[in-house]
Length: 481
RNA sequence: GGGCCGUUAGCUCAAUUGGCAGAGCAGGGGACUCUUAAUCCCAAGGUUGCAGGUUCGAUUCCUGCACGGCCCA
Image 1 (spheres, chains in turn orange, green):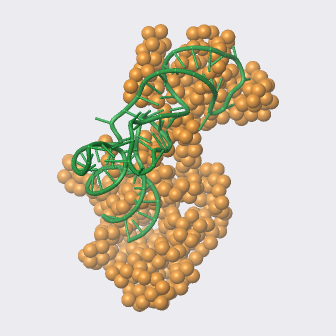
Image 2: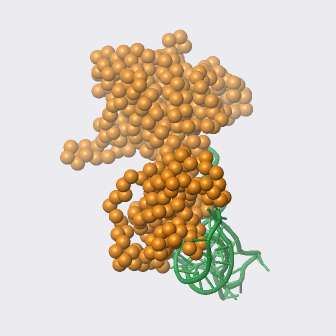
Image 3: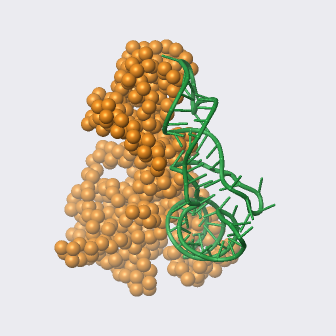
């Protein structure tokens, strides 16, 4: 009797033999359960109405009392109690209703009232089976807690865990709010290739795939950056894209090999302009998604220079020690052991991520990065050796990255060549030379501000989750079919 | 890649020193017309992740593997 399936199949056959279709085609005129709550939560205990509603959902609990029964039905918007009476429904309909299995999908007509204990309830006047469930749902009180099953069979997680449903509704609301925000400001939503002859726009190893008819390899994109900037060259001026990027690197609580990225580019803007846009946009999205936590997204956010942020947390001035040896030595005087095998920019990155990042709880911009870590950012207008770049942090994680975009094609060519040199030294996360992109820049790209936002990380922040897998419906897992 | 922890009934969890593998929920039978983790009675439910090893005897100890979690790189 695996998972009680035999009992359920026997009921299925009995229903069929009684002339009941266990899988009917549709059920018209359903209202969300929340509309009943909205209309009648103010009723007094014991108060009855003759207002009729038609709802549909999954049977989540049942409490029988002989000639009557209470049943809980759940839909996407909420849960409501049903009260069924044998004297109201008749013997056949009542017996069939109380012998349903938990997990069955039903449609119900009933009138709203409040029970003596004060629970809003639908008195069932008629009902029908909408789909038979042949497997037992997870236990009703604890729900499904096994993390592996929650991720591999997310449908069960959604069925049994209300807060998981709420999380993914929040995610959906956040993404639609993002689109609304950009659409309202004259941005065009565009779609650029996922399959790319060359990858670029970020520092990461790519996934490789093969096109049979062309007999050549393609890369799954690691970013949308370079194609979007070609659209800026083409005169579209304000563009954004929301889509999946793919990075062939380790999986952690903040890295998924497949993740959702928002990028936008705006002609005639710089990194200060787009910083103001990010704080406004996130503040709007948090409001629209119903965020109610401790974080304050109200603009303006705190702005720190990278040099000062690291100095404040470690006592190390990375700009005053602008080569590997002197930086390692300086860190040592502050009691920080750095790996002397790493390059200067890698060491700076380590100081940032280890000593600064975890302390940035409220939304914060860290500004003005060394040129070595930023092959697409324009030189800083007043700080030599730095570029006009910021990253935005919140709850200790980086969720956004932006530049005043480099638009000098000769400078861009030189940056690619520097990356190629790193590749030859064995660095596997470098930027391949993209001649199509440089040629596009040679036609002239206006001054441009560009931003990337990790949508999964933004949803983690808005929902208070600490693992990226919690906010991805079907996260990548080892093994499986 | 490394360290630690976990994997027992459909689900959530027990099992003393290595000695008959238990409970709640769900499912089955029965009672009950305002309950809400409903309640009460009865019966059933197991290849203890997989493969080895030690032992008279392994859920328990050892080795390897798989999958997962947390931390580190």
